Length: 168
Image (cartoon, rainbow, N blue to C red; front, side, top):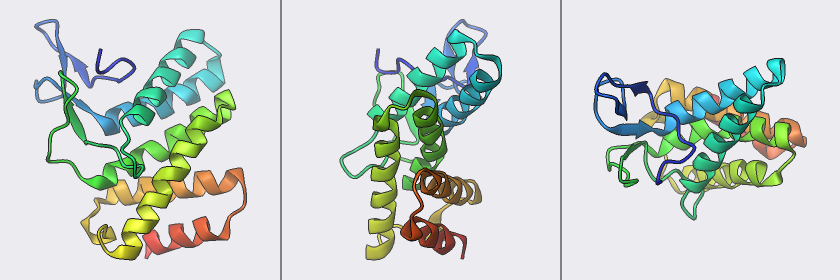
């Protein structure tokens, strides 16, 4: 289906899946946070199901990107279509889980996806089409963490400068 690998916020009483408000939508942030948490759990407990679920969630996050490295929506309908009300900053939620997946699998696709998104963030910051003032505190925190996580893979002064720029 359109959401294979995604993590739903809840299992509703009617047997369906959805968000915490009972709507049939899926959250990029929820999937990203779950993917990161599952990576941590798997690192501690080595349970195959945790590893496979984390990998599937990370793959979903990669597939939901546009050509500029941004996630095409913050929330998605059951059909797979995004709602139009999302912040472009939601991409920040995906950075650290993608790095964690890279570290776990050594599959560079995940690190390259995070790097591509960071390039997109930097370019939009530079041209003024993405402003830190429009981001929630959670998204800015996730962006800074994600940029620094990518920087840990190879020391990069530009990434450190970007993290500082986001923190200012």
